[in-house]
Length: 260
Ligand SMILES: NC(=O)c1ccc[n+]([C@@H]2O[C@H](COP(=O)([O-])OP(=O)(O)OC[C@H]3O[C@@H](n4cnc5c(N)ncnc54)[C@H](OP(=O)(O)O)[C@@H]3O)[C@@H](O)[C@H]2O)c1
Image (cartoon, rainbow, N blue to C red):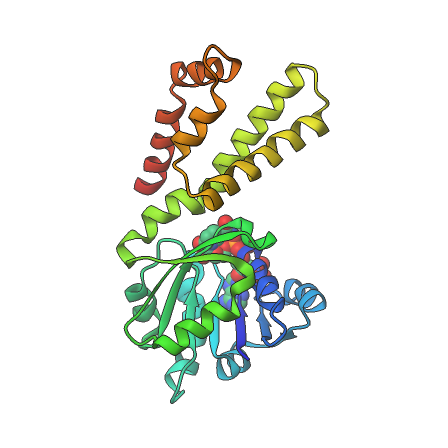
């Protein structure tokens, strides 16, 4: 059984809290600057709305779900609480672009830290969550953390220096896929489909294609070739995408996000 506290129950904090609540053995503590959001989440998750001190003192895992620019303010509150504890909780930081070292400097303490980089599909249990651990995180804590958060999606452990690269792919990626699906649906409407049908076709096709790659284990180039019959229609679509620089545009988007 894991006791999990969330400081900041905004978009990402609440998505992760909902995922944590699906594992019945977890108990949740919810803290938000304006408590209304935490109260709504409490009704959904059965967690307990509380303050920073109670959350920190009771949690095995203390999630930080505030915006990176809010870190100094939240650190001012949390720092004395954590420093006074003999065995502080494992901090779980989702703050984009904030290294473990910066977090420890702000908090003035060397708590064990798991740095995660989730994405919005966490809210439907299909998240891609990148993570890395500070030296003080023991194997038992890491294993128990992954077990407690199993309903959030897939987890992959990366070296900390690769988290920002991963973020540019899976953290920003939902926005790129949304653009792609929207464009497919627009084109479907242009060809006569209803908006509702066009969106369903585009989204279900994207889901199915992703599952084929993940579950079949074949390179996407082979899967693409399998759809392109000689002299057929799909290869004409592929030709047009190449002419418009589709693959280059996607690569440039990811690299621009990484360098931002
Ligand atoms: N959204 C994403 O796709 C995504 C992806 C990866 C990582 N992240 C990371 O997730 C974090 C949260 O992002 P978000 O999009 O969920 O932002 P958000 O919706 O603005 O949530 C931030 C929450 O923190 C609360 N808060 C601020 N200061 C606080 C304090 N001192 N004590 C307690 N709660 C406090 C805010 O409360 P009030 O509303 O009352 O001010 C708000 O509910 C960020 O660090 C971001 O980098 C987000």
